Image 1 (cartoon, one colour):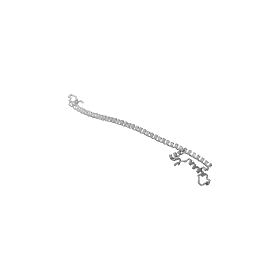
Image 2 (tube, rainbow, N blue to C red; image 1 turned 60 degrees about the vertical axis):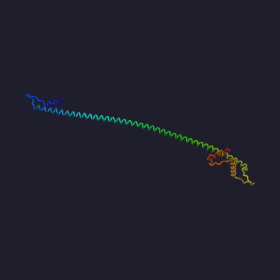
Image 3 (spheres, rainbow, N blue to C red; image 1 turned 135 degrees about the vertical axis):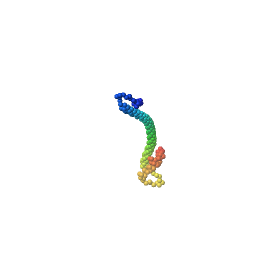
Length: 224
């Protein structure tokens, strides 16, 4: 508001004329107008101050909001970077674990396969040894059976020969006395003695399951 207006209102003077306005009323009106203008100026000044204060507060709040936004954006960026790093680390760790699990699984499979092949080879070797032992034992049993059959046949032949000519198995005696009559059992024993003399049999400690030396001696005697 113009400063001169209040000054004019304070210093104004009106001339007097006949039938003019009452000077007291005019002065009172001017005083009221001056007070009103002064109040308006004061209110305007206060309103401006409040507006400046509000503008400053708004500016401060806007600055705080900008700072808060910047901090929030920085926090979001940091959190995003940390999340990306954690995700990358988790993926790398998962890849390492998967690779380690694959290696361990392949190693276990290879070890199991090697162990299985070793066991199969060992079982096959034992099978071959058992088959060879069974074959040798079967040959020994067959040879022993043939030998026994031949011995039985020889024994039968001797028995027939003894029955036809009993003098062949009679033991010489210095006494020219007639020997007593022999029973059939005595004839069988004498025939067995004769067969043993014709085909001596080496003793076998374990029977059919005797050791290899007895079996070799038995078959060596068979060859003789």
